[in-house]
Image (cartoon, rainbow over all chains, first blue to last red; front, side, top):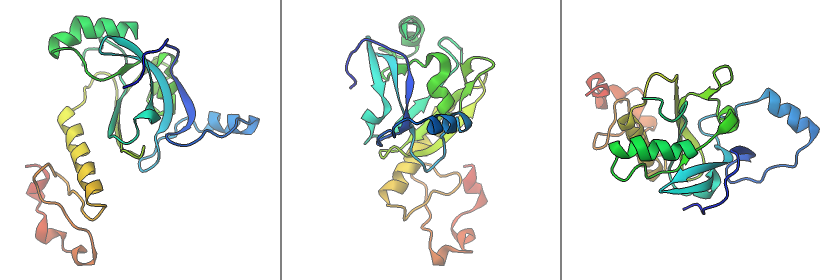
Amino acid sequence: MAEELNVGCARPTGGPVGETVPEKTPESDNEKKEVMSMIQVGKKAPDFTAPGYQNGKFINVKLSEHLGKWLLLCFYPGDFTFV
Amino acid sequence: MFVHKMWNDHELSKMVDGGVPFAMLSDAGGRVGKVYGVYDEDAGVEARGRFLIDPDGIIQGYEVLTPPVGRNVNETLRQVQAFQLVRESKGTEATPSGWKQGKMTLKPGPELVGNVWKEWKTEMASD
């Protein structure tokens, strides 16, 4: 269970789950702008932290802290969006 | 995520006893959604994306739909069960089209090449 914390903004960590993020260089920043999505089946999921709500508490969640379990990550346009 | 609380407390908890048990996350600005390729810059919202991630952090499958069409939970669970079976078998078994829990699997290897027709029938794709 993620600990209860002051909430911030969601952000990708810049690397895949379970790997250290390389130091930022101006070149790597340029590369990132060209390759926005890092999604490919059979490859590691991009890691991120995001604020959330669960069982009455506001929490911060880091994807890589849940390695070892099967995870289902769902995106949706917004709360109350009907379907 | 303050709205997540409102949605959970005022609507979702009326559909699911006790409300949603899993974490509802917030991605203001779509920074995570952009990396996952589901953020619509023009509309400023994320599509209905669903990513299946295994215990090693590997993405095994995903599906992305535009906002007006909802997902199919049974299909998602079927895929989780199929990937779990394959992982359990250490890759020695594969689940053919239409597989669901309890149905036969295939064991890919030299003997199966050209012989799938003997084991798997087209009706099995949709029953």
